Amino acid sequence: MILTVLILLACAAVIYLSSEYFVNGVEWVGLRFGVSRNAVGTVLAAFGTALPESVVTFVAVVTGHSAAEKQIGVGAAIGGPLVLSTVAYSVVGLSYLAFQRHAVGAMLNGREQARLARDQAWFMVVFGAKVALGLVVFRYKPLLGWAFLLAYAIYTWREITATDEVGAAIGSDSLELEPLKLRPRDLNPPTRWAVLQTLLALSIVFLGSEFFVHQLAALSAGLGLSTQLTSLLLSPIATELPETLNAIIWLRQGKTTLALGNISGAMMIQATVPSALGLLFTPWLLDKPLTIAAAVTFASIALMWLLLRCRALTAARLAVFGLLYLVFVGLAVYL
Picture 1 (cartoon, helix red, strand yellow):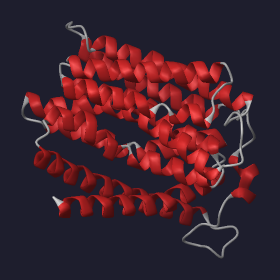
Picture 2 (cartoon, helix red, strand yellow):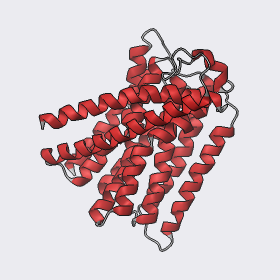
Picture 3 (cartoon, one colour):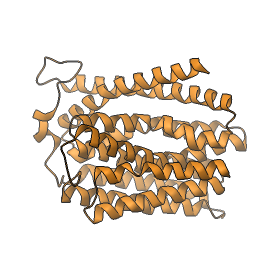
């Protein structure tokens, strides 16, 4: 048991260091390809860091030979957004308070809050649809999996092509970028080096996350936790670790928009891609624990949307979101 915990800590350290290289590389990739500052977080970074959770779902629902194995994939598809909307947002609030001790008031300006509010509204519509489908049975439900993939494609296109309301392309903020870690003395590193660093870092993050999940499964078995509790409580914490660590790194650099955008974009991926896989390869029926997890997630995002709409999002209020996850844990363990 002690060895497993030490390995988990080592994996977390590796993921954090790799995330340092990843966020540094993905900012330079965004600069080179003229991607807006917001889309760097919501699309480029989110797509990369959401891979572990999507792979867990894919492996479970496609290669699983039993209903229990496939249920792990369904649990991961619901658990991912739950962790991001509660734990990850709470970590962002706490980190902001730690790194920006002298900052008071709202974390974002009015235009930034309005844009993030639209992202939350988009997520609520998609997430509400996937939960509703998990409560009914009808013949053509699997075909709707393609609609979720289409929804993510539309969201991605909107993010990439939209004019950045809080600034032009990230290239206008190039002076804020730290030197590319693989070329620290090069003030204008070639695109290929930025892409190489991003892909190498992402590969290590991916492998570290997979190893983290396996060790977590061993730990849960040692603690006597059920497969369903593991897929809902522990597995999402592990697979959403890259997004959370990315947010901490960007907050340390004073880039709040990128930090929140990364989590918001990852939530959109979790609401669409794993859901599509679940609809295509499983009956996609939510039991009581999954329904409660979905309800807590929806409540968290509705609260986030309301705070953003009222221009009232502060770090202290965001930090409280973690309590919603504790509420879910208590209900899940009780059930």
